[in-house]
Structures are given as structure tokens and as C-alpha cells.
Amino acid sequence: MTAASGPIRPLYAQASGSPIRAMLALAGQEGMISLAGGHPDPALLPADWLRECLLEVASGVQGRSLQYGATEGLPALRAASAELLRQRGLQAQMEEVLITTGSQQAIDLLARVLMEPGAGIAVEPFNYPAALQAFRFAGAQLVQVPADAQGMNVDRLEAVLTAARPKVLYIVPNFANPTGAVMPLARRLRLLELAVRHGVTLVEDDPYGELWFGEPPPPSLAQLNQQAGSPAQVAYTTSYSKVVAPALRLGMLLAPPDIARAIVLAKQAADVHSGSLEQLTLTAMLASGRLAAHLGMLRQAYALKASALAGALHSHCDGLIEFSEPRGGMFVWAQLGSELPLMSTQAWTDFGLKHRVLAVPGAAFSLHNRAQARLRLSFANPSVEDLREGALRLGRGLRSLQA
Ligand code: PMP
Image (cartoon, rainbow, N blue to C red; front, side, top):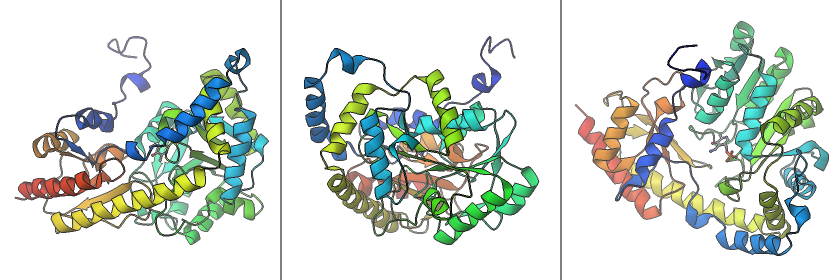
């Protein structure tokens, strides 16, 4: 422990804050267009639907509603969540579903429960930073598995599993953050086979799976594993953040019984249970039967925004970046042309301030925080107009960087 860090463990004292958060602090500046945040569009968040359900819950509040609740979650919400998972093709009984404070908490608790300090966790080269942070704080060693446009490269996975012997593998198979990649069925099946052979527990994180545009992604690893008689250990988490509202801070976990038992103990130590008033409100929202229609609306609206951004990038950034059309989720993962310089996160922030458009540099998602010829652009939050203007500014800015 260094004197400067006082009583704070070096793991925390030396951790860097999220560069995305630093960027988001600039997003509110007058005239700034932010393609940086992965936040839903506030115009698409269900304020009226939530208000109605909140009032219904408020009018029924009694002393009893304000009591401590079960760590596993409100029974009615567990039942509704199990039903939702069944609609998505999973076998799930209410007793098997745990309610968590966002899927972020599921990831954090899984990290605490599954990772011995120093043990390896296999991950792709570019990942959701807050998951990596949870694994690091649990003392895990990040083990990199190569990936391509179709997600984790399972052909190269076996060599990594043999050499580094990670105990756990973290994966976002649907519309990953930041790459937007969707793992094809054949890779999913091969991944499960390798997980069984090497005794690796899979942490499947699926917050974006329902936000598909043309056609739904292949079945989840958890579903494929169940269909095969559950030979692999798969802990599956998904979230209400992207399909209802992030402010509720509610997600769910479906995990093998021994893992679920340990998670309940870890959650008791973390926050006892997720907020009951939020759980009651979400339960009322799900009971109203409006989620399917809401989801249909979201898919259409985000598909429109994705194609607006993609079209504008083709028009204004031609020859400067390459990217695949998003098939769902919230992100475009742009590869910068080789004639553009590799820039630090600070340089990208300065670029954003100068050209009035923010994007997250690839370093923010890389395991070693090194500069990358990548940018993550999100089409979720800005209006269609701002997406077009943002692409125009990005093109101008990138052109000015060309030597
Ligand atoms: N996993 C991934 C890949 C994410 O991108 C996010 C948030 N953007 C989360 C998990 C956490 O979401 P939440 O806690 O809101 O459910």
C-alpha cells in the first residue's frame, strides 16, 4: 500500500475512472452532439406508462410495502421475469430467477462469487468497461481471446483455454458493447462445447438481445445449453434498462443452483435486496401487458436511428472510417482509416471539444487502455437530425486530421 493511497486498497486507489464518464460530462455543453453515451433516447423511455403504474403503486402503498423484502426479489417480479425468459425460449421457473440491481450488479456479484484473486477470466479484446472493472476489482486476471466481426473467435479459444486456464469466460453474444457483433449459432455451439471440455463457467450478459432490427439473434448460450441437457455452467443475465428504463436499476440472473445460492449470500452483503418500490412499479408495468408493444416500437425507432447514422457516415465519412451496419443494439464500431493518427483519449476529448461531436475512443474498451484505431459511435440517444449533423462534423474533423 502506498502512503498516498492511505487505507484504500491499491486495486481501487490506482484504478482509472471511466473515460466515457469524462466524455459524458462534456455532452451537456451547449451545441455539443454526443455519439458517446450508450444511454437510451429519453423520448423513447416510457414516462407515461411508468407514471400510470407508479401512481397505481403509490395508491396501494401501506406500511407493509415499506418493509424489508426478500434478497431474491419480489415474488411477483420473479414470476413475471421467469415468464419473460420463457418467452425468449429459456426454461425458467420463478424460484430460479434472481432480481438484481441492474445487470451490472449481476456481473459484479458473479465476479465476487466466481473469481479467486489471481484467477483468469477470458474476455474479448474490446469490452464493456464496467464489466472489466468488476472483474479487476474481484482480483481477476483478464485473459484476452481474439475476436473478429462475428464476436469471439472460438477457433482460437481452445489454445487460450489450454495455455492460460481461465476459470470463467465473460461474453455478450448479442449486439456487443462496443463492437455490435452478433455471435453466429455455430460459434455459440462450439463455445459451449469448449466450456464443457475445459470446465469453464460462462457468464452470458445479454442486455441488448431484444433490440434487434431485422431478425432476432440466434438462441442464447443459456438456451442452447438447456437444449443440450445443461452440460455447461452458464450464468445468464439480462436487464430491464434497455427495454423499460435504466432508472429502475433492475435486472435478472438465471444461474445454476449452486451459483444462485452464493449470489444470494453476496447480494445480502451488498444491498440486501433491490428497491421494493421500483420492483412493485416494474411488476405493475409488466402486468399491464404493454411490454411487447413497447419493444416493437423501440426496435423500429432504434432501427431508424441506426440507419440514419449509418447513411450519414457513408455520406460524410467515406474513406475515413469503415463499419458494419448495426443489426441491433445501440452501437456502431468504426475502424479508422490507416492514414489517420492513433490518438490518446485526451486527444479525442480535445477533438470533440473542437469539432463539437463526441465519440468514445477504442482505448476505453481495450483491456490495456491503449490507443486504438477505433471509435464507438452510439445512435441511441441523439435525434435523427443530430445523428446526421454529428456524422457531418465527425467527417470534417477526421478529414482535418489527415496529414
Ligand atoms: N452489460 C453491458 C454489455 C452493458 O452495456 C451494460 C450497460 N450499458 C450493462 C451490462 C449494465 O446495464 P444495467 O446495469 O443498466 O442493467
